[in-house]
Amino acid sequence: MPRTPNSHGESEEEVSEPLERPELGHLAKWSVSSHKYGYGVENLKDGNEGTFWQSEGPQPHIIDLSFPKRVFISAVSLHTSHARDDSYTPSRISIRAGTGLHDLQEVRLQEFNKPDGWLHIPLRPMDSADEEVEGPPIPCHHIRILIIANHLNGKDTHVRGLRVFGAAQSNPNVASPERSEEATPSKGQGLSDGKRLLELGHDGRSGFTSQAFKMHEWIR
Image (cartoon, rainbow, N blue to C red):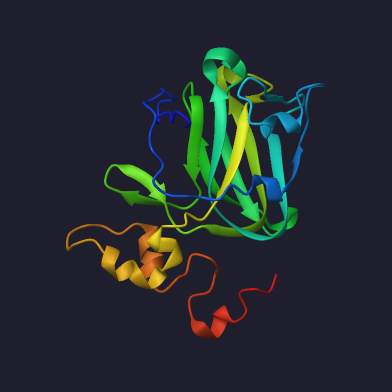
């Protein structure tokens, strides 16, 4: 089970993953902006933390996943190792999603400090107590991860693994939006943006919030 670094990049104890999420990477066509010979895109998905993709070109360095049909993505996980990669370690990334290259929108901008291990990044996070949890998934045909900066301003980057997860099967906020009323905080507690959308009837799977418009949600 992956070790999850905290916001400072320090490795914490292994944490359990109570929600079952399907891994969607095998459905996509993968490509990268550049790579050094022998350190290509296949190293991102081989399941071996001893191998890595190494870029060989100008920043930002890009990983693209293109899906043949619409998928619902809840989170992305990257494996990095500052201890082994030093200035090749990503320190700032941007995640963008859309129906294709022409309409990609940034959904997360994340910074790290000497990360070591799996970095689990919910695309539409919801606040829960003191931690960030996955909210409704984002529908898309294409997802792009940009490595904008590296530790110590390194030029090229190393990424040792990448996983893309679908909606959590047992997450009531995803599977049953109508149950969001049960999850409404008591008076005096704030609502995150994700919870506000759910309470307004947003299903987390389209840009439409009414029955009249949901009939068009499958039009690409």
